[in-house]
Each structure stands twice: as structure tokens, then as C-alpha cells.
Image (cartoon, rainbow, N blue to C red; front, side):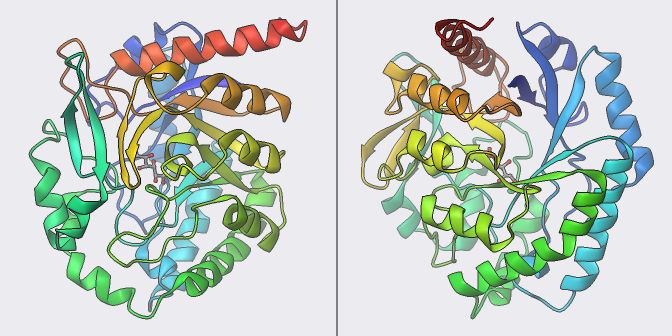
Length: 357
Ligand code: DNO
């Protein structure tokens, strides 16, 4: 595996490439062109500039998170074929710039969802949290304003204000789209992009839905082992794979994370490894990466990745906000750096217990 950190680009991130370069064992970043709206083509020039900036700092672009999928593709809206053409063009440009991993999601309207961005923990750190009863008490259009005050002046992925302004239209677009239709639309999209993925050897890695259940009555399909395996079989090509995000699949305590990893051998192209703490059904908060701080057994998760021969990029995921840092919630430097060091430590121990360096 290769240890990486997510980076939003110098115009958006409070964390610098120079800082990332100093985290032991981190050799790559997972990045994006954050200012290009879903549906627009990424030009080769912009991709090249992004690569050059990362490489000048002694790192490399290990993959993209995300090339976002336009809602017309997800909902089979009027311009879906046009947006798929644009997506193909972006993949071609990425392939020509030698980038071979693309993370994306297929969640309608909202990307990941939290009800609090700065819940205070006993040690004074703050974390992202989710409480189903709070979501149930809100209208979808109130969701953004209910959390926007805690964003520390950053733009959070999936929560761009211009998207949130169109929320009612977006809900309208998904009228009549149930889980089966969403699966169909995902299949249609993947079948159209597979030829360009094969040609440039690009690995598509869908991100699970977070939380792993329907929010505001919208359909969600990347929620458990059964559905993930259905997706892999539906378009049975190694270029159609998964971003295994423990924090997203793990929102549902019924998901057995190590067993899920083992069931997807060869098709996990990217891993997001983090911990969270379950308080009650539908009520969880994020935690430090350390097993004892949350509900997951991080050793078993890393061991499952090792056992299936996972060799893609991995990254620590949402961190707590600690040591007075002001950053995008979940994406500060300090706690993610601690997470990377801890995951590297687990990995080293697992390798050495198998007699490997
Ligand atoms: C949130 C992230 C998501 C993820 C997208 C992938 O912190 O995990 O925004 O990047 O769903 O497309």
C-alpha cells in the first residue's frame, strides 16, 4: 500500500504540501480540481499544472478524489449523455497525464451528511457527528444552514453553496428515482466509461454512501456488502472497483468491515481508514484513528487489507480538530498526521509478523 493524504489544492486547503511531505511515510496526495463544477471537462493543462505543483513539493498525485458525477447522470436527467461525454473526456485527459485512480460517489443530492461539525469531546477535541433525530427534524433545504456556521470558512466537499441553492430543483430531479433506478443509472454510466478506463488503465473506485442509509427519503445504494458486490458483478471489469471507506460503511454497525474487505479482493482500489464511535442506532461521532478510541478494530481492518494483497493508496480520513487548529472540519493536519503514523505502524507490524519488511 501507499500512504497518502487528501489535499484540496493550494487555493482551498489550510494544509500545505510542505507539511504533508513531512509526515513520515506519506509519499502521495489524493487531490482534485476543486473549482471545476461537476459536469465540466478537466483540461489537460489544468491537470498538468496540478501535477507539477505536487511534484515540485516532492510528492506525487496518487489519485483523484473526486471527479464528481453530475446529478443528471445519477438521475438519468435530460443531459446525461452530454455529461457522460464530458466525464469520458476528463478521464482521457487524466489518463494522458498518467493518473490512473478516480474516486467518485453516486449519492443523490447530498454527498456525505453530518448534523454537527464540531461536537466537543471529553479531551477538548472536536469531531463530526451524526444524529438521525436531528436530520428528521430538518427540511433538506435547512441542512446546509444548520451546519455552515461550523465550516471554519472553508468550502466542504459536496456542500458547495451554489449546489445548496438548487436543492429544491435537485429533489425534483430525483422524483421517481428509487434504488433500482439508481442502480440502473450507475450501470449505464459505468458501461459507457469502461472503454476509456480500459484504454488508459484507469481504476474507478466508488465511494460508499455516508451514512450508509437513505437520508431525506433519497435512495442510497452503496451501503453494504450485498450492494457493493452487486455493483462489482453488474459491470464485471477490474476497472470498476471500490473505495473502501471504513467510516462510511461502518456507520451501520451491522457491516462487518474486515469480512467486507475480504469479499472484495482485487476490487478495492483505494482505502479510507478511520474510526468512529457508535452511541446508539443512528447516532455516532467520529473518533481518533486508534482502535480504543472508537468502535472499530483497526488492526483487523488493516490485516484484512494486508491479507487480500491490497496495494493501492490508502489515506487516513476525517481527523479530530486538535491543538487549536482551524481547518476544514475533518481535514486538519494534526490528527490526520497522527492517523497516518498509526496506520503505518499497524501495517509495519503486520508485515513483520509475516516475515516481510
Ligand atoms: C468526505 C468524503 C466524501 C468523498 C466523496 C467521494 O469527507 O469522504 O466527500 O470524498 O463522497 O466522491
